Length: 261
Image 1 (cartoon, rainbow, N blue to C red):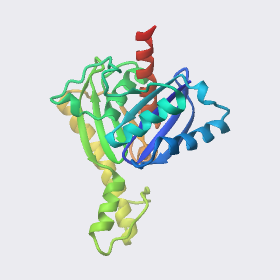
Image 2: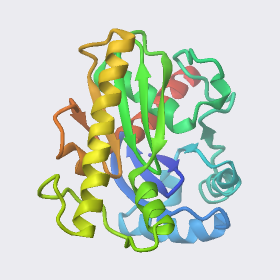
Image 3: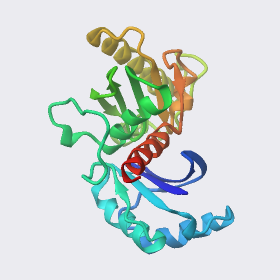
Image 4: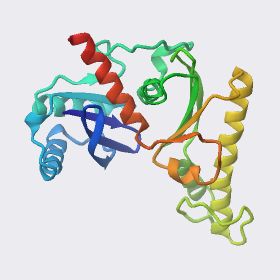
């Protein structure tokens, strides 16, 4: 059994994988001060509820967009699971696709993992992956599976918080799909601007990427925490897969395991 750890800017997701399939997952809020011991005690208790022992874990793979979190997560793997973890971006975990951008070293681990997930889940590129996280990212995968670039925009929760912080009379709101575009009170107006504004942004960016890159029929994948919500407001997505990134981690681990056989 493999432990896949996806450390983002808002949450850290711990997933148990058996034969590449997720059998259990747990999420905690990001806290770079959290120690390996704190994570170990917490995670082992949750695993025990599923009948899983530390000895059942034969490998650990980590994707992290936060360098400060890596030390504790590496220690967690080494101390509690007796595994030297594979880390996306390290030389010890080679990618089986090209990163064809100006500064490959700047591409986030999550975007690399989603690139691998395209060929694992869809079979081949080209494709566009929209990941609704702390940032909303759109990433383009070429026909040969290479990562060729993308778009980064503020996540919708960041935008909502910015409205609350910067405008004295605007409240903090939940992100919801409003019944109509036209709002008739402050909260409804904000919800419309955030929800339909983001839907329009995604639709517009996808249309521009398809035109610019001559990819009129490239499938679009939606993933991330708010993917389900936004998929309910548009038909631009061909695939809705909240576990897309985890599937990419499973594929990367499998790639590495084949080189060790």
